[in-house]
Image (tube, rainbow, N blue to C red; front, side, top):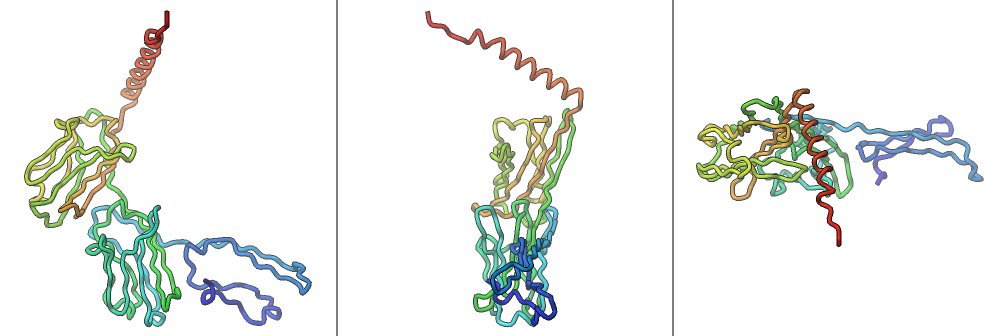
Length: 303
């Protein structure tokens, strides 16, 4: 694993320089390294520990931007005959996004229309990856391996954070606007679905399809969209009478034939005044006291 990545100066005894050079460090190399110098009878003469921390490139982008670039620039002289592979790492493993080899590009089916590299990347040394329509679910670790004859030549890791739209409103307002504007050319046969996530469990609020709107029963009189959302590209959701219990994550999926065309996530925070917060606390306490008083009445005894 380290045959082509580590080296030391020659004549270490004469120069007294026992330093180790580690080539192409990645975040996987962050570790504690120990050098031990023994005598011929295996007695320890010197010992040195070095803590290595490899800082990873971090990129931030707002959800809704047209694209984001994951940078990777290297020297083109080292890229003759290599293969370039970009991966996305999630908790359940890694997913191969793109493979560049011999002037050909192979995309993962889920990213066929969302990832690309510059022309002639090996000649320019620019191995950066462009990710189109970044979503908050794209946040995470991306890694590019450059290999030749199955040997790793160099590696690049990029941490991507897609910042989500955040909206705040005071409880008691007539409504709140959850924005979603897209410049995509939306066909008439798509479905637009807005969800509210509570404890990561989605609850369907509204579905727009073929010019008609279907509401969840609990939100029938509280949610609406603009007229002609597909023609205007305005897929925003209006939530009426926002309450503190409405705070949380909202997500809109735009699908065609079960394929996600685009999506948008909005974090809503409904602020409660100190007076309202005290009133809510008193109401919860009264309900708790009432429940406590009812417990003896609910108890049954055998006769």
